[in-house]
Structures are given as C-alpha cells and as structure tokens.
Length: 90
Image 1 (tube, helix red, strand yellow):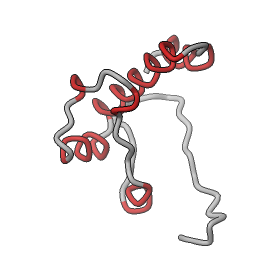
Image 2 (image 1 turned 90 degrees about the vertical axis):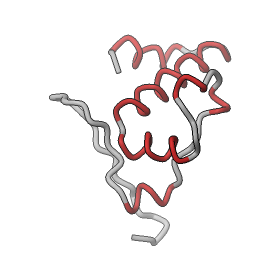
Image 3 (image 1 turned 180 degrees about the horizontal axis):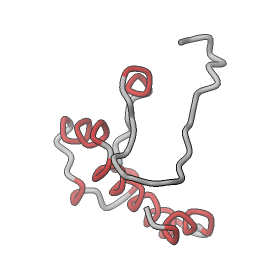
Image 4 (image 1 turned 45 degrees about the vertical axis):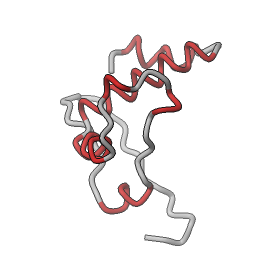
C-alpha cells in the first residue's frame, strides 16, 4: 500500500471513506497475500466482484495459527504482529 492509502485510514469520516479504505486494503491483500488469495478463490470470490466492505471475506483465525499469513512485497520497514497469547492457546 502507498503512504497516502495508509494515511487515508486515519481520516475516515463517513461510510464512503470507510468503504474505499476497506476495498483498498482488501485489494492489496488479495494481490500480495498468497494465503488470503487462495482462501478467497476457494470461496469463488474474485477481487473485482467486491464492491462493498460487507462482501469482503474474513480469513479464519485458525489460518494465523497454521500458516504464514504475509504479503509478498519487499520493504525495508514493516511491522510484525504477534499475539499476546492471553487466551492460553498456543
């Protein structure tokens, strides 16, 4: 995602802005995240068919426990999210 797309997330003021930002994130993940794209395609969902955030499929939590859910983009700066594991599950 480009910096202006990331910054747009912090200036959402209405449903249209939210929808545009959500679709932008969805399209980025669909194009750059092999796990997410395979999941969406297994549901017969194509990126161009998604025109509203309510149609975006959610990746099951189990996938984050069993797969490397990462985007295939080269960047010098990135953030890694690690669960706090407060649920007592590994």
